[in-house]
Length: 264
Image (cartoon, rainbow, N blue to C red):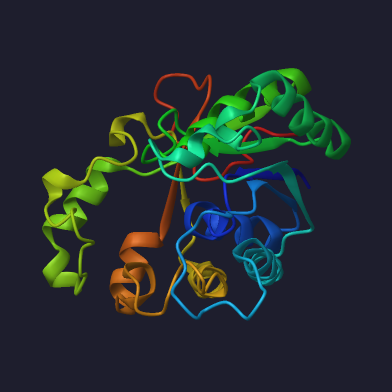
């Protein structure tokens, strides 16, 4: 059995991006480790959602702990940085935010864990962090460097198959999908990478219940009425049934169905 380390920016990212892969890996007997760069201090939260005196970071820690149980995570660690907020906001300049982190210092923190766990596989994000969030971009930069320091055998960029999602957007009405504001048409969808770049597609349809439960655990960020959870089951399966990755350094034509292919 192998050890998988998933590196994410904020609580809830793990459920959305790699939740199915993590649940499947755990069910198959692999050791699943989650590292979160921040506690998501600057996420949006509805008025009155938090208890008196409770901080958003505290609530998101609790939500993440529940999601980890659902996904079969054996160990979770915070890297120790503060949420940077969305791109071009004042919180990007806070000294201890992840966006301002020294790459070498942050990578050394992560590399220490990779070495301790003898990680076989590390997941990060694509170079644009999927959609341009500064902490997601930083996960890519820090994660790639940490893998170099720790000599981690396989490194994957978690991403979206842009072409596939454009095709879904064109069929949104058929699936009963209410597309998010600002992304009403296929032409508006610019997340992820072109389909031809995808090397690895993990079928997680058998683990969609766990993925949905993990997403729902992050109630401060993902309401039952949100785009993520409000879609009917067939649409949820179409959107979330495959999790896509790009294996760094992969040979041309690589087409995997697991992150663990080729490991001894």
